[in-house]
Image 1 (cartoon, helix red, strand yellow):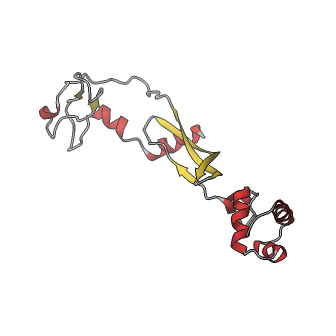
Image 2 (tube, rainbow, N blue to C red):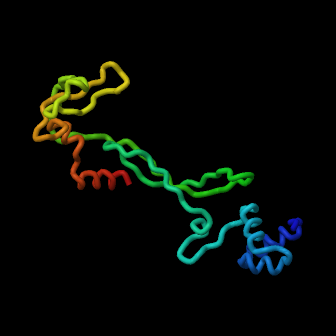
Image 3 (tube, rainbow, N blue to C red):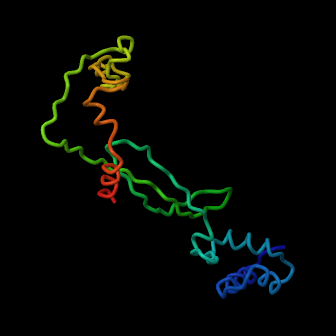
Length: 177
């Protein structure tokens, strides 16, 4: 079955009027419902709203792209429309992107930063702080090495950095929104 300009024009008009693919196929004659749906997609005609959703939600599922989480970063989700190629057809779809912005750490009052013992990996014991310092690919990379209390992997200072109470994390996330 060939799609002539007249048939495409009639298809577009009937689709805009809100007829279903089956009804359009019956009016055009000699074409199946699936052929109508395929042509609608190739023409990139706007989708139809389904019960409980929007036209875009009915047309394309949203993909969620997440950024890696870090303790001093806040994130929020934004929606972007992107085009991608599928076969010989360019498709537009909405994707959710989690944007990440750096937050600043403000210490409470006077904080004493311990002097690092600058231990290598082979020098660590179960009673030393295993907080990494620097870039592991550089020669000056080392671990804190200060004494760690009660089977903890970190000293008191690095424990406060690594383990933040849930309420503080929620507050930081709320400020970022």
